[in-house]
Length: 235
Image 1 (cartoon, rainbow, N blue to C red):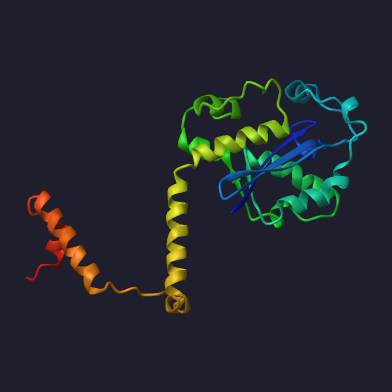
Image 2 (spheres, one colour):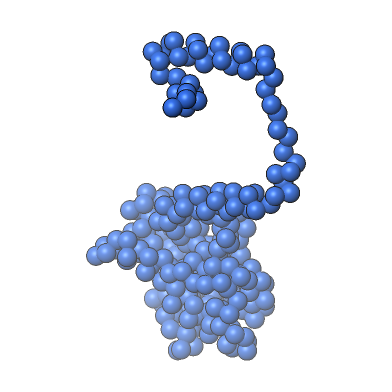
């Protein structure tokens, strides 16, 4: 299973008011393990940044002046998320901005390109009802080091969210392992050609006698509780 833990930073709160994405980042998780692959770009929005937003992420328009437009990175971004599950904290916010950027380019909504979207904020509210469920609050609750998060940043936040998500869903590890083992067992049993390749080794008379001596010794030392003898004893 391939997942992209994703985050964005923006010029403001509402894409319907013309606000744009100024940073987008995603880190790749495959089979619940970070792969060290990531996508990260700052984006020139061609507009001013609201003061409130800049206070949150610290990104200025001057800093973004020489950065690519979203149109320049869109295809690479879509290739990176293609077919993956997107894991996002407060997903409607980021998905709304991504869809607005894609619409400006005449492209389909982001859900057209990914497998599905999982909202970790909704997940956290279900797991911890009545508690604060911001990314910082979850890091504190789950004992994840977020000491470097002085300001919001898409790449750092995506990396922290990956840790949060993997801890919140770690109970799924066991189920995944059982499922994978069961699938392998079924596949093996279904492949009769592999069974034909197995060599069957039969013990000779001397080996059987030595085996019986070992069982007798176990029977003696266990006070008559040798399971192998009890299983083979006649009724």
